[in-house]
Length: 286
Image (cartoon, rainbow, N blue to C red; front, side, top):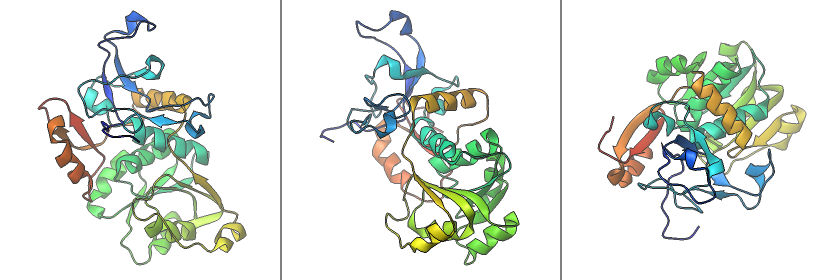
């Protein structure tokens, strides 16, 4: 990354100008942006060494205007810009995590950080797209009703001093898979609740980047581990179809005007939010 840099990777807007090699009929289209470029072939673009991210290697969405390749601009699945702006990175990340686990209908999936941007989408995708039973893990059980509206079958607090037993009891046995964005604090409990032959997919470590692991836990129980970051263009399009079909809905905690981006960043660090925080390039806030 080189500075100065304009951050912001979840972007929705209207095409107001195009380059000479771009079909002029794209002018005026309402689009969401696939968030990175790479030379990887279809299905491997997310693991290419030259992957470059908008808002990191390129200037991003904390701005009035953004320049991006036409082939990475996709039609908005919803009519509202604000609602479309919550899906790009979190949604693609969650979708790829779910596909990696090859979730089957009726399986039980535990989702950590279930009230966060990725977590709230993991709940919806696992439950509403792949027909899984979801155990949502949150801090505050006051969020239980909202989690269930998103599709969760059960909601538990990670503050329980017997979380593994709670999970196994409420499910009637060990669970099939874990979708994790927390990392260290729930790693041991996640493995403890998994069945033999279970799957664990991690795409974030908000609670801690290092952990202790007894390798026997993995090989004696035949646990499959997946590391996951973002996803492919085909997955992005499948996600957009699921959004337009109403299987996945936007979850917005709060919006801020663009000029208060610093305040929004500070708010983002606070716990207890539900869903995404969105910057708006005008004074319309929720």
